[in-house]
Length: 115
Image (tube, rainbow, N blue to C red; front, side, top):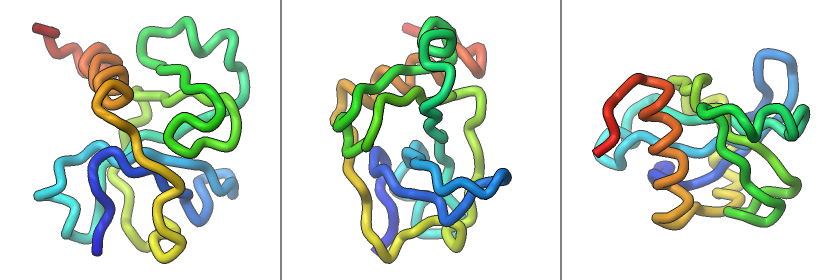
């Protein structure tokens, strides 16, 4: 078993020692390897961040989040699966409309034209 696109997991700890949630955004065909592409969530400075084009606001319980959060697409990261609490299973999964919100912001971050 490996993480699927749209699955939310917790990191064992990030660079500041916090076990924050992430959402897997890489396509499933790539997720059987050692790493996945993921976007982290933050629960601080929500009022400021939710106005930024590269951030996507998600309310508590969306996809299994335990508090209001923003996904910061400017922090798209290649994450080693050993850093993810995979054995705990996903905390939730985003549906197509939630993933579209992420992808639109990711396109803005990467300066990819939206069709």
